[in-house]
Each structure stands twice: as structure tokens, then as C-alpha cells.
Image (cartoon, rainbow, N blue to C red; front, side, top):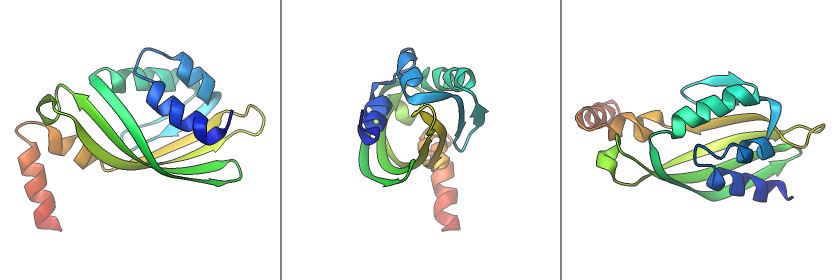
Length: 141
């Protein structure tokens, strides 16, 4: 399968319980990192993803750009999702990027690093504190 297509389909197929999507995409020795955590190995990644997706009611990734350089892909995306505890349960969109590197041996992802503004994604969306975080962010800029 075309790697770009595999990335897009995998991001949009995974919803928390269907770990076969992760098995298809990730090498057993994958290293995953985002603003909240760093995990090593497919089992640790599955556990992290299942926990992260637990409050998510719906999610969709709209890929804007995917650039390839050898085995490494840089992906720019908009993630639209709904979670009960965030944004009063209403859908919202966050822009992010991923650097994804495939293993030459397994042809699966061996390294995945997500970049996203966690303040925009979580802290600004929590009822009660969100307004304070947005105010503080505006004053600092």
C-alpha cells in the first residue's frame, strides 16, 4: 500500500478499540511522542491511544500536506473532534503536524512524533478554565 494512503486511512480509521489499525501501521518497536507523553513499543502505544481516545466521541483528520523524504513523512493536518469534557461537547478543530518514519526492515512506522498546541486542544476547551487560559494567552502575545 502507498505509505501516504496508509497514514491517512490509519489516522481516520482508528477510534479507540480497533487496535488492528495500529498493528497494521506501527512496528513492534515504535517510539511515539506528543506534547503529553513519550512511549516505546506497540503495547505501550496501544494503551496510550486507548486511554487518549476514551473520551473522544468523534474524530476526523483532514491532511493538508504530506511531504516525503526517504522513509520520513511530514504531515500537516487539521483534527476535528468531539469530546464530552471539552468545548461543552461541541466539535472543534485543532491544527497539528506529525513526523512519521518508516522502518526499512518492517515497512511499518518506527517513529511517530506529533506536534500540536495542547493549550488550544485541551486547556482552552475546558469549561471554566478555558476562558482564563485564552485571556492569559492573549496577554502574553
